[in-house]
Length: 77
Image (cartoon, rainbow, N blue to C red):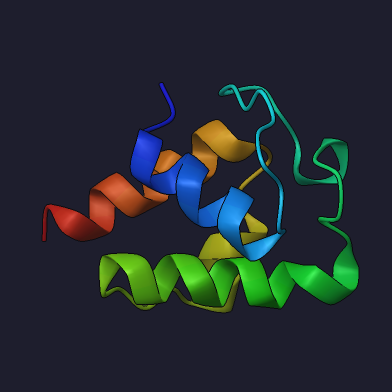
């Protein structure tokens, strides 16, 4: 399940009022999340959570659910 914090970080960075984001949602299904904004979204998430991701970790994420799992795993270290 996607946390409100992660959803809000994504929506804020993409300047969206609301959008339904679920575990299976892929980045390219979210309005404004394209290759140019990808790094901005990831950087915003890192900043909000106080985390750093390795590029390979982000590349392995197939959907937002995977991204949530990555965030969760980093927070529990």
